[in-house]
Image (cartoon, rainbow, N blue to C red):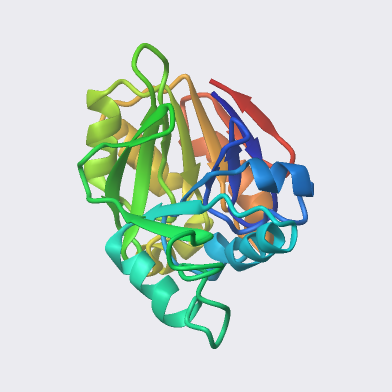
Length: 246
């Protein structure tokens, strides 16, 4: 599995065919790459994770690319996209364009704990602790290492239990706030370096690599310093353009 960090908002490209969230896409890849994407896996409906989805669909239509994009997510996220984005007011409803029988956009609901086959991958959603219904994911295929992604989350024991049980060695984890803002992080459904360190210790998880993402820019230097104090496992700070080989 090759995973590329696309932008400053959350978006990862997996093997050139699947997006994991769609915050920053169109300013990070060319039109040919956009047209190769077939599947989009969304964690939740916040704008920094869905911003470029409407633009991706317009690009494909204007480029006469009518192969549909399939968007996978939990029921709430799909409902929010239908009601508030693809409603023919904010943006065209591409589930009916160019026609009912050949739409550019299709939605597939994912249910917590049930694996879904998406192309060559198995995808298992895990319900996370955030301010809106949010799915973390464990992605992989039989006989290979898997990747886990927390999405935006506060402390979520179910996620770490699943990671432990499946011996997932590569984990992308959000750390949004520094320790001085721990209560803000908990109330808003995010992690600090200390909250992350406590979860790893509580569940006795020692991954091959933690990939840190979603740091609030104002606090990134403080968070980076605190991570070294609270984590006893290898970690790497992700930035735009980084490539992960799993």
